[in-house]
Image 1: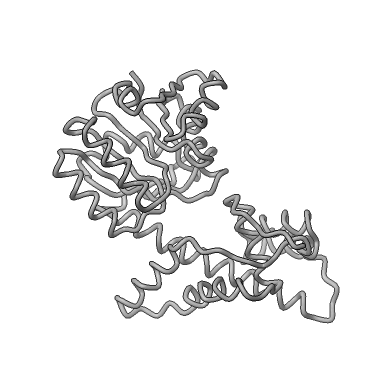
Image 2: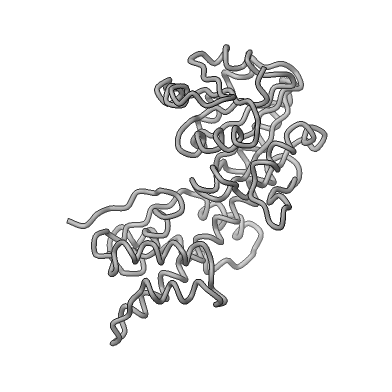
Length: 307
């Protein structure tokens, strides 16, 4: 019997599964399209078992069963849950590692509780690399069930001085709430970086942006992974002339702004960064090209190449 199951074997789900395997867990995998599951099966990774049928996947897990979802937020999560409730037993645990809206997580928590199932909303940050090597993890749900999943989540998380970058956040959807606000902050940070380079780009000086980002990322106050990604982006395309500055939004900043309005908390930077993404559909500023490059760097998000 396997320790944990992962549903959704796209890039993030596959990397989460590999992360678990690298930490000695036996992992069952399932994907709606079997082709992605077969890719992992064909790699003959010790400890991994892939299944074409969801029922066989569920039956392969030790009890209480622990199922980690890494499927797109929204209806896909509800579709999977609808299937799982008929296959799981009372006391089994479901974790949603996607960017789900916290109110959806609150609703699903109550819905799963009515079937005797434990439900966790798990905020995961770190992009593709983090999913494989250790992300920041923000779980929330039934605290009494955290003992059954906490060690796994802490083991696969990033480490700082040997301590896991994973902490039980609170009940119901509070973990996804924290992740939502995290993503709002992320929007604002990327926007500030983009605007700063835009000023440099507009000046009379001919800056080497790769060199500037390298200097800024070592010893300065603004050093960060985002600045490292900027350096990598400028190394590949010094003036970002190969891409369009079109920046998509995944909805989390909008949710953050809606909460800020509900709570009467000013969130001007995050709001501005979201409006810039809307404006990016109609202009091609250097700032937007910087942000598009950063998003591609940490999350593999698509960039639009210039014609």
